[in-house]
Image (cartoon, rainbow, N blue to C red; front, side, top):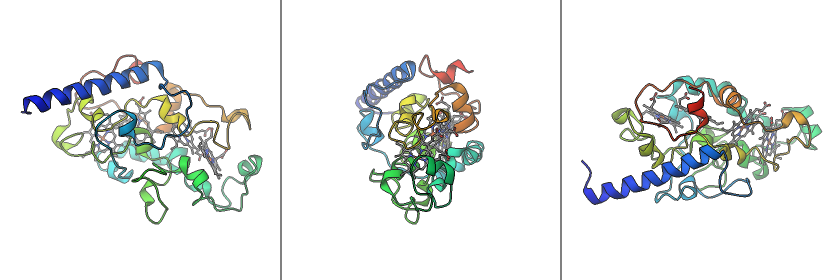
Length: 233
Ligand code: HEC
Ligand code: HEC
Ligand code: HEC
Ligand code: HEC
């Protein structure tokens, strides 16, 4: 059992976080007027005491194989590759980009085509951080260093409460604000260029484009009310 004083702090902290997330999910918008990418760590953004580091998508694979395999097949599992020369030639020409140029080390692109670019534990280069290329698990679910521990999310604590993992940085359900860090007007491919790039956030988008969603196996207690995830059950 936890020590009393520590327990009180933890419960209060977790409650604050879950309330924040519930509000975020219910309103499908965060309290920032301008949805541009935020360089601050997720921990700081959520007002948590700890900061968390990116560990890479392959660390999630051993426990979430179906999600991993399905994610790999989505366009977002491969967003890094479109930066290579010769890829998506017509689209690049339409957007005024040079199809022969190698954009895989261009900071102007990596902020949205890799995980955590610009943060201390985020993507550096394909050689140094290959597991952080593209839109990875942690682009949507938050940096994993603390929550993937066996006694938090993992094998020794499969029935973890949502509050426990929220306090360690998990984003779940994923608020639209997280998508808007990349799906915004700073992208070269927006509805201004072609209506086909219009941003639509719906249950269908989440199901078809992020990965295939599975019913949770273990008991985690109730999710924050009013979320898209609950509505679909
Ligand atoms: C602010 C985030 C952001 C930045 C910066 C960004 N992208 Fe993207 N990019 C996106 C998003 C979001 C999409 C998906 C658009 C869609 O399909 O609706 C995308 C799509 C693409 C595509 C696929 C287009 C298609 O129709 O096949 C290419 C190629 C691409 N980006 C290249 C680049 C390059 C090169 C740069 C840097 C010069 C860059 N992007 C900078 C967010 C960004
Ligand atoms: C583009 C965003 C995005 C990416 C990338 C992403 N997820 Fe998800 N994930 C979601 C969404 C959306 C849900 C559904 C819940 C919700 O509405 O937020 C979800 C749900 C889940 C769940 C709950 C069970 C389920 O299947 O619904 C697990 C586990 C999960 N994701 C793991 C992963 C792992 C592991 C990866 C990387 C291989 C990953 N996710 C990549 C957005 C994403
Ligand atoms: C780290 C940046 C990033 C985040 C976060 C992100 N995306 Fe994306 N997304 C991209 C990029 C880049 C592409 C372009 C992939 C390509 O064309 O190869 C893309 C493509 C897509 C597409 C495909 C568009 C098409 O017409 O083919 C959908 C749908 C999408 N994202 C939905 C989401 C949702 C929903 C979320 C949040 C739950 C999300 N994305 C979060 C970067 C991101
Ligand atoms: C050691 C095993 C393990 C690892 C590693 C792991 N997870 Fe999980 N995760 C779990 C278990 C167990 C659940 C509960 C699944 C259920 O109830 O079906 C879970 C649930 C989740 C959920 C749903 C919310 C929740 O906590 O119940 C998300 C999102 C998620 N994991 C994302 C990730 C991501 C992203 C990574 C990699 C950074 C990761 N996980 C790594 C075991 C793990």
